[in-house]
Amino acid sequence: MKYDKSTMHAYPTGLYQYIFFTALFLHPSHIYTGFYCGMNHCAYIGIALYATSLTYWINPLMNSRRRTIDMIVAKSSIIYHIYLSFYTQNMLITTLPISIGSGLYFLSFHLNNCNYIKSAVVCHCLLHMLVSFGASMIYMDYYDKNKSQVL
Image 1: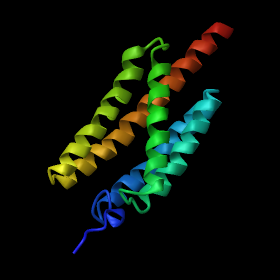
Image 2 (image 1 turned 120 degrees about the horizontal axis):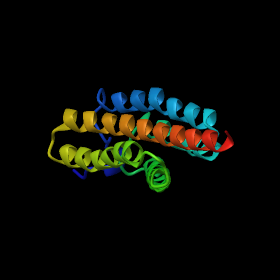
Image 3 (image 1 turned 120 degrees about the vertical axis):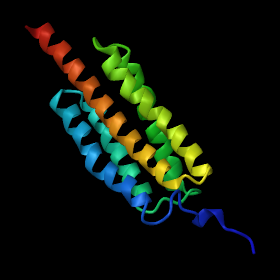
Image 4 (image 1 turned 180 degrees about the vertical axis):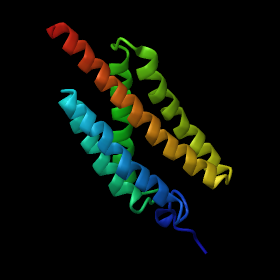
């Protein structure tokens, strides 16, 4: 019998929902922070990431167009935020969480391939947490820098 990879979930039912709910509740925090700090373009990127992430994680099929779109938006967002973090006053606080979070994607992927599924899910949830925190730190750093220039 041939196995159809298009119906294969990224994680088993009951586990991928943790990633969905992590994205559901964390993404709005850095979107709000982006708008609050006047980083509207970043907030709109956050909205795009929120939409593609939730669309994918509601039913995460590995070989789906939804996954491809989510990966493109996520990778583009990460690259842009790392770029922004290089121009902050607190590079360590802004770059480190996003870099560690990005590294957790590869660890999560590896753990999933080695059948450490629950550990892979935890890593992926931590990825969402760290990247969201790092993005918020970037926005606040730019806000503080712009605020001090006005004074």
